[in-house]
Image 1 (cartoon, rainbow, N blue to C red):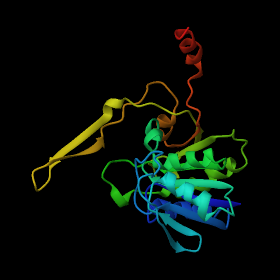
Image 2: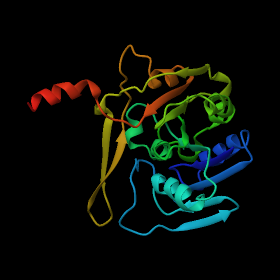
Image 3: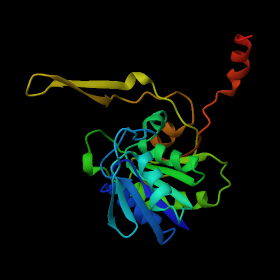
Length: 254
């Protein structure tokens, strides 16, 4: 089995090293094509206004000066053109990709690009307990549970153009309670915070931050699963059509 690894935290990210270790429990044919720098929040964006450059860091290890989507596309269409992967793993992201995070996430979007290309694709993220942890984010849950979570997904009869989103809880490996297959949750969008300040020249600048999470009540979703100490496994599909609205809208145009 040939595996392509990517992420959105960049080629030098700790989580990518963790993913490489996990992947080598599954195969010895590992390729890495990741962004040269951090691309968190890049979503499914594609670089069209500037050229991309590929840098080789070693045998079967490359970086791309672009987004996670760029990296997967370069991996499939150029670097691995004659040796296509059987599996794409994206992560392990530093931080959660739960609920509506998946619409912003470069990690999940890299897996989406793989799914679009017809390759089995899985996104993996390590939740952490508090903001501001930086490089101190612990990956012990992902390290200990990564192989156990991935192995059942290798041969599962996943539908075409789907992917799987995995989130490891913010607890020590020994405290993980197990795996739950759950739906995508929804937070209260009011959690968004904007941190503002002024630079030395007097011009105002802004950072997006996140306030406390407000979860949808009484639902068993990815949010509740990780909060209760479980690994959350969520199947996602790329067709965004809201089928229940088709008849209503069709009638509106008659």
